[in-house]
Amino acid sequence: MPEALSAPLVVEFPFTRSLGPVQSAFLTGLRERTVLGVRTAEGKVLVPPVEYDPVTAEELRELTEVATTGTVTTWAWNHAPRPAQPLDTPFAWVLVRLDGADTALLHALDAPGPEAVRTGMRVRIRWAAERTGAITDIACFEPYDGGDTGHGAPHDGEFTDPVTGIVTPTRLDYRYTPGRAQSAYLEALSGQRIVGERCPSCHKAYVPPRGACPTCGVATTEQVEVGPRGTVTTFCIVNIKAKTLDIEVPYVYAHIALDGADLALHARIGGIPYDQVRMGLRVEPVWTESGRHPDHYRPTGEPDADYDAYKELL
Image 1 (cartoon, one colour):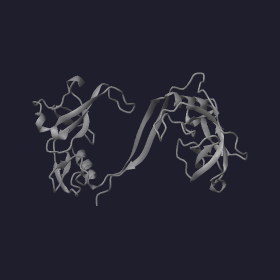
Image 2 (cartoon, rainbow, N blue to C red; image 1 turned 180 degrees about the vertical axis):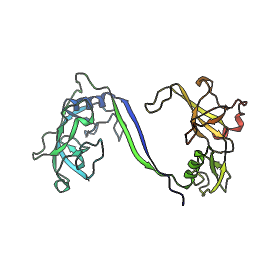
Image 3 (cartoon, rainbow, N blue to C red; image 1 turned 90 degrees about the vertical axis):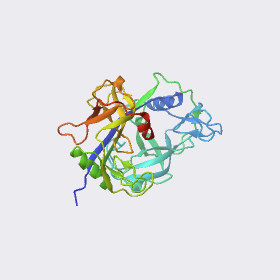
Image 4 (cartoon, rainbow, N blue to C red; image 1 turned 120 degrees about the vertical axis):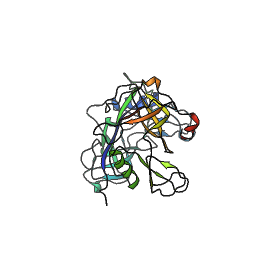
């Protein structure tokens, strides 16, 4: 049996969004140690606030200040915190209905152990020492011995220097282990060959192979070598430079139908000005000396493919 392929992978990007008046007021309020909700036509106060009523889709703008104390409605113990989570010691994830609110807010509860947490316990906000206008301005919740401290008061949502946008870093770490079909595909790439699998029912050749036909739902085992040349079916021009890629913008990313394949794969197009890339352009792979996959595809110099030859792969 060949050794199973496995590799760590990281998907990471900054998520940037602008804020409307409700979310802007909510996050700016956190910076000022104020928690705001929004009131619906039925009189319910939603915390965190939303801009449209989840029941009627009506636009919501009536802001209400709620208390910084509340009640745990449900919880789960986190015995092994991951990097960038609110606390670096074991803690409870809790849903807390703040006094004056009708919905619950998800956050961390600092507690010595799961035996110290229960549904119905009273908690209060522990504010972060430095606040910037983000949900992390709430450092966590902590146990609180007092009772209900209020039922909300109208708030105009006006603050000095309001927060109008946020950038949230997003990161996913995982280990990828390909199956039989993709392992064969990757092994072939290391030898500068492109191998797919053919469906025994519809006879389509899929690259990269999936181990099963997505149309017929049957297993695929017959290997078929395709390409290496192919046709650009559609493409986009990338104008934003990725921090982890040493590629100057603008550049073109395209779907390429390799000769003999019935599924287009995606790859970067090089060796031609970005504004000359076109549908039907004939291309071939460019391999680096130590690369395990094509670095990019470049024009072959052949005449463009006829639209009818690739229209089913758009």
